[in-house]
Amino acid sequence: MGQKVGFAGFLWRWAFALVLVLGTYNPSGYSFITWVFDGDTEFGPIILIVGLLLLIGWIFVVNATFKAIGWLGVTLGAALFAAVIWLLVDVGLLSMDSTGIMTWFALVVLSLILAVGMAWSHVKRRITGQLNVDDVDD
Image 1: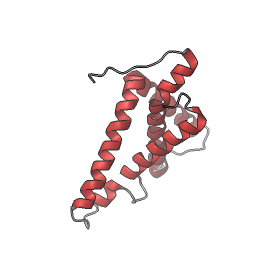
Image 2: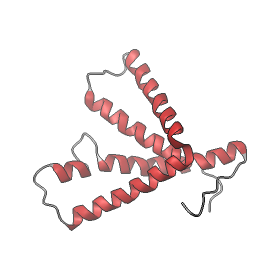
Image 3: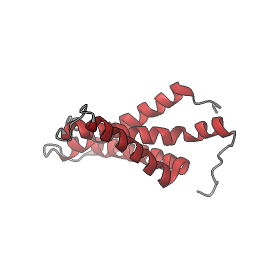
Image 4: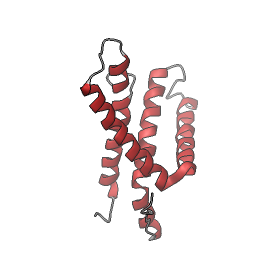
């Protein structure tokens, strides 16, 4: 069990969350949602396996995130990133009319919040010296 997460550890967690989020849906048309609902795909075992793998990934990441930072942390993280997007719109670097870019931003922000949630216990331990121990009954 690693005692340090470091920047590289955070990047790995972010990469995992980004693959999970963008693999589930993205505006490019290459995602599980598009694959399943494009009308040309017949439901079969491969779709079921990929869907179950994505579901397992989502359950793992969302559970870890909410155990680490809770609703308040997720809400504050979303509010912080929303304020950053507002700033980018305000200074003219981003347009509210470009829904595709806004969707990409929202997906990247979601993956960042999930990555922070997965790494938070390590960050908290490093800053405060406190360990997080989950109940065995959960």
